[in-house]
Image (tube, rainbow, N blue to C red; front, side):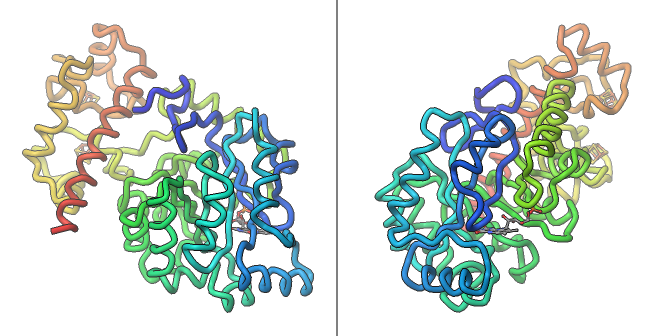
Length: 378
Ligand SMILES: Cc1cc2nc3c(=O)[nH]c(=O)nc-3n(C[C@H](O)[C@H](O)[C@H](O)COP(=O)(O)O)c2cc1C
Ligand code: SF4
Ligand code: SF4
């Protein structure tokens, strides 16, 4: 667990995220001043989208002629640089949503703007002109180009996000793995009408940060996304300060009360792989066994991994619990007298317990994806 802040422990591009809510870009609307008017209630602002090469600039001009909002700028790189500068001294992390057709188009922006911003590849725009230009959703059907862009940015040292709609690619799980291998840091997913099961599918495919997008306008929906794998949520159309503040306050309250703002559900209640942190000792037939099988980890290896990760932490105590150690214990929201007695003996609050479980889950996830990575490179 990164030692960042005391509430979310969430680091993006080497900075602490103060609120796990982002502004999602709207071309022609979301610029620095729009974002900074909302600075109290957001952690990241994705400004743009900006069209940065000739084909996308022509497409943007055509879309503007047809009545869409667009950022029209003769020298997009200098316009972006001016916008980014406005974030100096602010605690909002700036991301730039970019429409480009080749790695070079992105690298030109990177060499002028530098490492302090997140480079978001817009693989989301589905306007015909942009798709015909070879950008936006075109990249989801031409994933070699998409991966080349991500790889080039990553190798240059940029922090990379990819914005896309779920369900456009024939296989979102393979897409997530491809982007992970190419060097993406964030998947910014417009979930459309897919529910949290789509998010869980993507969560279980890669260890990247995930921002869930589309109609994240109520705390109930946000909480559902957090418990299925989202690190953050983002808003575009309803990103007024009233909505954002309501979300920020509810998320803060929940984080302080629970100790882990995006704790997964337990595996047998539909949780993602992070829920392995709450799993029992692997000795019975239950959803743990097939889940482990999918990860390629044997029950014995899982057992040993959890025990070793808990060593020298308070999770290794808990004699009065079902399996003799808190490392096998359930989520704090599941009432249990035996666990609570052990927590009391160890001097741990529920919040501290959940923070330890979060750290445990990070260790498990790291191992799961390390192994998967090795397998895939064989
Ligand atoms: C007017 C408008 C312009 C948009 N422009 C972009 C864009 O340039 N790049 C992008 O990735 N998404 C763009 N989007 C999509 C939004 O960022 C977001 O994914 C979508 O609106 C769903 O989220 P919401 O329900 O919070 O609005 C745009 C959306 C709107 C309504
Ligand atoms: S090991 Fe326990 S928590 Fe995990 S899936 Fe099985 S019954 Fe549920
Ligand atoms: S002691 Fe309670 S919390 Fe721990 S595994 Fe048993 S039922 Fe779950």
